[in-house]
Amino acid sequence: MSALELAAVVASALGVWLTGRRAPVCWGVMVLASALYGIVFWQARLYADAALQGVFALLALYGWWGWVRGVRAAGQVQVVTLPPKSLWYGVGIAALLGLAFGIMLRTTTDDPLPLLDALLSAYSILGQVWMARRHLACWWLWIAIDSVYTGLFIIRDLYLTAALYAAFIVLAALGLQAWRKAGRAA
Image (spheres, one colour):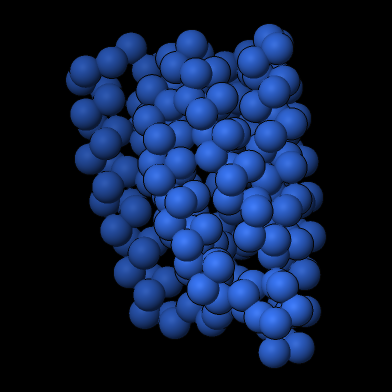
């Protein structure tokens, strides 16, 4: 564990907690967390995850813009239903992009688990897009992704990050519960 990894953990946990509370400032915290984790993952030779952090930073800006437009008078973001067709379309596109990126990583890098790294990255992008669009389904996806990531980070000896992602599962479950409640109240 390094000081850099610790800082990334703290920023990430704060960002996810703020997201669960539907606070638009979460996106600024996520940009910082993405920058820190980009370096951590590059050092661990998790290249897809390092690149993913750049995408996350861009999506954080998109999310911030989208959430500011979707804020209610009470100051919290309005939850939006994800149509089933969009759900399946997103899942399918993420799978195809993940497979393609995994093949590229396998042939061009020393990534020890290129397909898993790439698929997790593709589905993380989907989760981030759904979150930016305020879809409740993002939390279900994050629970699944973070479960697999926890194991991956243990394998890569990133124990503090593995603990963070285990905590993310809990935070995602809490976010799901809060967003469900907010959706029913709307």
